[in-house]
Length: 77
Image 1: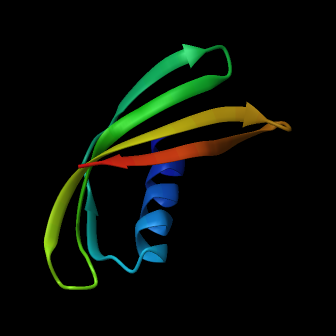
Image 2: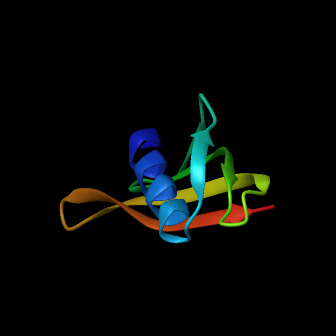
Image 3: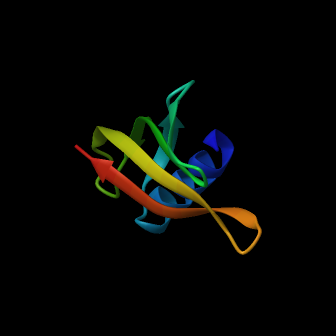
């Protein structure tokens, strides 16, 4: 679950044009339902203006169509 969230979070930040992305070394993984998990951690990055930021990160991972999918990625400053 953590690996899926990391990949989705990095991709989301890169799409926004952010760089120097560092995700927390370990993330909290919580079972929400039989086939759904919440993964939480933090991320630091630099935006297009080269300003540094730290944000909380939350992903929802669900079993869909026979495979685990990240269905939501949220960043909260």
